[in-house]
Amino acid sequence: MDEVGARAFAAARAMIGARFRPQGCDPATGLDCVGLVWAAYAAAGRRLPRPRAYPLRGWNEARIVAALQAAGFVRDEGRVAMGDVALIALPAGQFHLGLLGGETMVHAHAGLRRVVETPLDDAARTASRWRLD
Image (cartoon, rainbow, N blue to C red):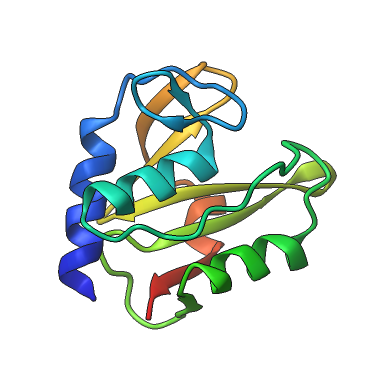
């Protein structure tokens, strides 16, 4: 699946600059972190069942994990591969998703109001990683 992950990461990079929009799943109209992951995999040729009506805050880890598993992702703590999805636990019970690639991550940044690529920080490096099965 590494080839699909690499294509998904490349697709996510092509979405850098797309505006942030809660529940957004289309780079033309805006993306949130979930929408970015699902749109990147769709652009890579893998349409995945997408969770709907999820909150930006208060979406508990069990529900996020269930959504990742329903889409065909499995937890993988081995080597990092292009396109792995990082599930990052943020303060106050908030969670964030991003696509990993080498030493960077592409993600929909709510504070910056757009999709960005950033160097991996400690939170991304220690996040649980998910890969398509």
